[in-house]
Image 1 (cartoon, rainbow, N blue to C red):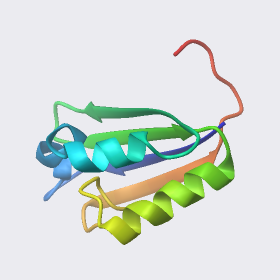
Image 2: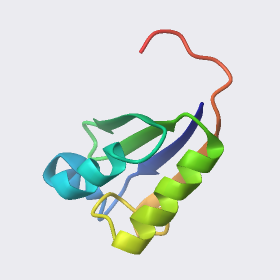
Image 3: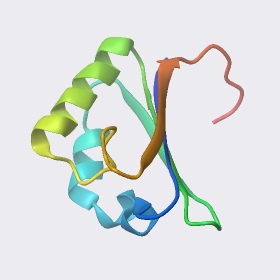
Length: 96
């Protein structure tokens, strides 16, 4: 499985505009081939962390490309408040 983790923090953080207020974008993401889950974690400090998990790397890349084309309301990798994006293969998992 593969995942992309986005960490948004600091001034202008999109925590108040998290995926729960963007049902269309979330529905599109959840309908993507190979989609497993989406987690959105809002910190007390206003930071927002999103975790998207897909079956294959190709599934992840296709969903990312679709989101960019649709101008998804989900936080974008190149957004001004995005401090860091990490993506890659999940090498260990327990639970979920």
